[in-house]
Image (cartoon, rainbow, N blue to C red):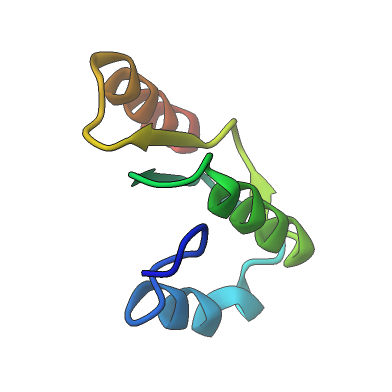
Length: 82
């Protein structure tokens, strides 16, 4: 993967293929990283906003392995979207 971008081989092409259907859809974003400062998440959020998706709650990012707080925040994402 390139620094500060979504995974380029599988994930980004898949996400790009659905971007046209995100308008008005509720979404939550989460992911992990081991580099940079999480700019990739801010860029991903901006893409979703540009696609008129509804970001239900703040995104969750975990640096390397998720902490207990990160796991709880991911559970909260599930509750928010449900």
